[in-house]
Amino acid sequence: MSVINTPPPVANPTDIYGQPVSNEKLDNYLTHGKGFLSWALTLDHKRIGIMYMVGVLATFLLGGIFAVLLRTELIWAGQTLPHLIADTWTSQYNQMFTLHGAVMTFLFIIPAIPAILGNFVLPIMLGAKDVAFPKLNLASFHIYVLGSLFFVWILVGGLVNAAMASYMNAAELAIWMDNWGWLFPYGLDTGWVFYTPYSTSKTTAAVVPATIGVFILGFSSILTGLNFIASIHMLRPKGMTWFRLPLFAWALYATALIQILATPVLAITLLLLAAERLLQIGIFDPALGGDPVLYQHFFWFYSHPAVYIMVLPALGVISETIGVMCRKHIFGYNFIALSSVAIALFGFLVWGHHMFTSGQSALANALFSLITFSVSIPSAVKVFNWLSTMYGGSIRLNTVMYWVLGSILVFTIGGLTGLHLGTLSTDIHLHDTYFVVAHFHYVMMGTVLFSLVAGMYYWWPKIFGVMFHEGFGKLAAIVTIVGFNLAFFIQFILGAQGMPRRYASYEPQYEIYHQISTWGAFLMGLGLFLVLGNWLHSIWYGKKAPANPWGANTLEWQTTSPPPHDNFKQAPTAGDPYDLKRWRWEESTEEWVLKDDAVRSELQAVKPNH
Ligand code: HEM
Ligand SMILES: [Cu+2]
Image 1 (cartoon, rainbow, N blue to C red):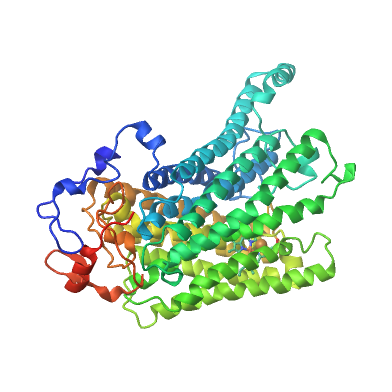
Image 2 (image 1 turned 45 degrees about the vertical axis):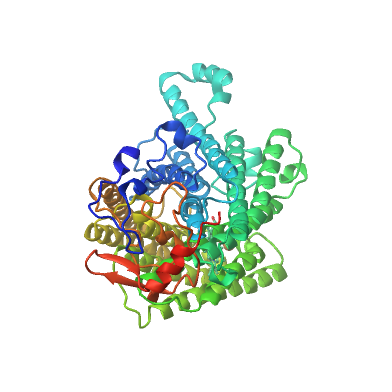
């Protein structure tokens, strides 16, 4: 990193005020300290964000490999992939979708935007030097790595078992398992939801390491949320009242409320599950007098709010970037800010919509259905505000905007199809079919992934100090977005026709739909590799980024790109974060500079206050 990102000496560098800066001042957080430990033990929120970037994107690759394997298995009815692990090829399929779901949910999508972009951007947006508790922040990262290693452990366990099974006969294998089986847990096949009683009384012992892993990951999430709440309360600069807080920060704040309030419920539920499995207490297992539906209640009490842990930061990225890319003040700031909080609160009241077919009472079903519809109101408020922001704006169709528009598109489709699932009569038919698979891929995967990528592109110049290739970026966006819709839209039809989820094979009439879906998935994989190529290319060959490449007015654009170790050489003051009129494009230097000389001298007079 440090070698690549040493900024090349610039002939006549200027800062955002158009003032000359010496090259010596261009020291940045990437060059500040070298060597492995300067990263692994750093307290700098920016470096922690980069480490999350590497870790979280690696888990995405892992989950993605499983996704491609799943879609390949489904391209034809009957067996497609060679049978390597597990007793039968169908149970091999069960293990693959379990690891796919668990890795994507707990290791990738939940941390994704807050851990990568939130960590990097939030403190700088607040004009602060770091988050409120930098050591806790580093601890969150190490806890994340530890939790993830449990899943790596299960994965390695599965491969070792497969290898042993192919070398040994049955008797030898049984002896080997007796001696070493505990060290190599394998065969996690419960689905990412770990439903009881299957998870507590049947299947393999891998359930325990998996739940411990998720338990540990939960702490990482809780501590990050805590840190963000404290940072937003305590570190806002002079002039940044609550209603001048950037919308991305509002979204992270609402997310953090859920992280803190809901995640402990998941942690305790999984602890009970592990206890039930190990000690047969009788909480969830009906054979022991327990209640499996209680597990579902506990699980969804966390996991419905958790979908908002995933999606609120994504909506925050859209709200943050869309006005900048349309050169217009964001429309309905207060509504967007408060709808994040409303979604976070309402999100706690609708978990029962995952259990319409579980035998819960008709009254509960009706109430959960009604409240589910009410959550769609604040979601729709956001979409209307984005559209109103675009209306009459001077829209720049650049790479960032391609991803933002892609994200709005898939969020709208995903949200609207949620209404079919929230309607009792239609959900009875659609429950546990590919319609649900399509719905949640649109909302969690499409919306969150596209916004993550949009945010990565938007802040890329700030993070690495380089610009990416626009044409290449747009091509990658088109390939991915088309691939995604090809892969998942067809699944709504497939599900409505009755294809159940979590099946390794199917009736021949579904084959054509599955084939289209698989080809879409391949296309999408290609698009994502193009994105990666685009990013890596920019690190080596990209033009040096100016401080404020988009002409945005939030504070992170008022420091150099990449920022110095302590973020600001000069403390910024905060005004309306979306007052884009303060900036003008300077033709001669090809940079956005502050318009008003008076503003400039006023800013320079302010002394650093932290
Ligand atoms: C307008 C908003 C939304 C509505 C009305 C809605 C409604 C629903 C309903 C009723 C179900 C249950 C379907 C069934 O099991 O038969 C469901 C499933 C699901 N939804 Fe949503 N949803 C919305 C937004 C979201 C968002 C934003 C996310 C994620 C970021 C999400 C993720 C999921 C997931 C993961 C499942 C399936 C879980 C599983 O069974 O494995 N939903 N949704
Ligand atoms: Cu839900």
